[in-house]
Length: 79
Image (tube, rainbow, N blue to C red; front, side):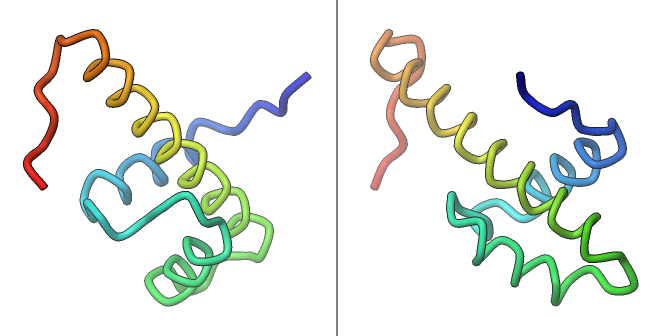
């Protein structure tokens, strides 16, 4: 069974990813370092929870985009 994250962790993580397009990636360590510099005064546990959900959310967004491109519902972004 997976762990259930509090809604405030999800809200903060999604807000950060949407406001900083291209900053976060699928690497937890890099995401944690980015969050460490941008968020101050939060506990280590909260920082790890947010970084973990950011990583998971980015993976989910990428797989959803890939599936939509394969289905032909979305055109691929120009490289």
